[in-house]
Amino acid sequence: MNTAATTELLVILIGGLTGGALFLAVVALYGLPPRPPGSGPSRLARLRRDVLSPRGAIAVVTGILVLVATRWVVAGVGVALLAYSWRSISGARGERAAIARLEGLATWTESLRDTIAGAVGLEQAIPSSTRIAAPAIREPLLRLVDRLHTRMPMPEALRMFATDLDDPSADLIIAALIINARLRGPGLRDLLGALSRSVREELDMRRKVSAERRSTRRSVQMVVLISVGMALGLALLDRTFLAPYSSPFGQVVLALIAGLYGMGIWWLRRLAKFESPQRLLGTTVEQAGDGA
Image (cartoon, rainbow, N blue to C red; front, side):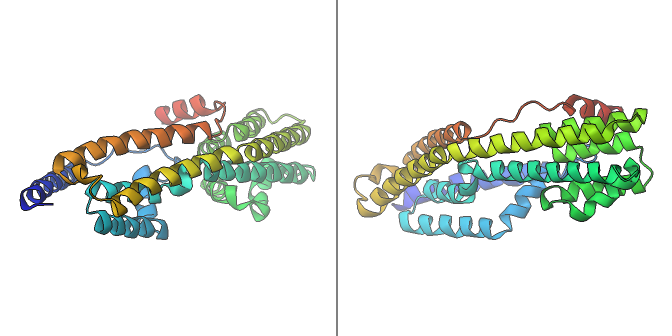
């Protein structure tokens, strides 16, 4: 890459960094809109946590190595983003988390049912259930117990608990608890038993679906690996064939190609993703948050 091309590329990089700095300055001055209570950490907080994790460090090191080997900024940034999002490309991580959360809900519901069978009220049964709560639901459950300890009304605390879990199956269980907390009627033990059996049946169905989708996820990962490997192999072994991409205009074209390729990966991930049904308490929670 000659001196003129290098200068133009540096100008593009400086312009991009300047735009990013201006955006961060605006965010620092005006801030971000407040999040409703009980909605969990923001996307920015999760992104900062992931970037500072070993996953982020591996992505940065991989991007730097590709940048040094190819001398293409777009290739370095693209490979870094690919390495950062590799665990989420197939969608298996999110589905495993959903299955673990569903199994934790089933166990928690059965624990509530057995505790209530001993003539214990719902206010005492929920704190007692934290001792055997699964890790997938322990943190939202502890927040629920903290809200109850601060004298928050039971229905409102349960709605926030539903927001923390963000699971359609949890909404069915929590809706039954909200109705019982308002009406104090009998039959909660039998209802929780029926709901726990329903959650167990859904858990078995999701496990079967997840097992059937493993081949699709494997195909997605193989397509990504082969495509990126061929592109990097050509860039390292046959520089003359890809020499036009070394110019600033070539980098812009390469960025467009990488963007199209990223959209293709996103579409493959959508094909392998488990689509959750619409939540029962989603609208209710949002209205409650707006009213507060």
